[in-house]
Length: 310
Image (cartoon, rainbow, N blue to C red; front, top):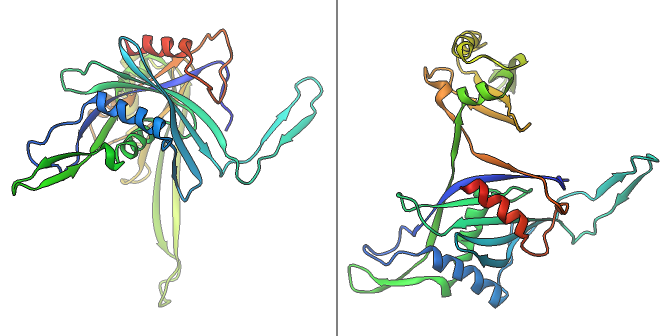
């Protein structure tokens, strides 16, 4: 998958590090500093590469840095199940293919910033440069794996006085951005779509009847800004147009930055427009083009991401 050389989307979330459920009551908690130290230890031990998804995908952290406000991780991901690349010359229209060897995989890099100071809920803000394979959930999985190494576990006495080993696990949730109502007011409402799936017995006389999925779709294209005083009346009318009671309702909005956001909302909820999108921030205007792979931490990207955190 090709990504832009001019901009990146940044996922914004919050992270909590806690003890695994098997930790003895009152066991010492893991700290963010210990998690960062574990990442550095993996690199030093050359045990930083994680194979997963039937050994077709790979993730690792190559660099760990910090400034006054953030810990900075440079994360890489590779996927063997991607095709080679095809390019075309815009002047001559000549095309060429870049073939991929069997053991090669598509490679992408991502900067991850974790705020050192926790908020009032003891959660640390986290920002993730979104590239194929790297997002809030995949960072959570990888940090969990990093801390699975036995040398990175802690021990504490259980109720019976026996020493018991335990490890750290992670909770990472996306920050909610503006409500759907606010997003519509600030952007362009593209369309609203209802989708329902039903099962139909094709031949009820057979001992093993065939089941066929019937997909019902209904879409209203709007493609315009909607005045704030018209949003509620419009959606009250739209939900009355549901083709079936079990239809799912999807809304697509084009933000002022040009991003198309899709979210499912509950048409049975009178407060359906108060649901929220997950916060994604936009960074651009780089002096040097952005590559799919970063050989080292880019200070300009870190600086732009830091601004979005604040």
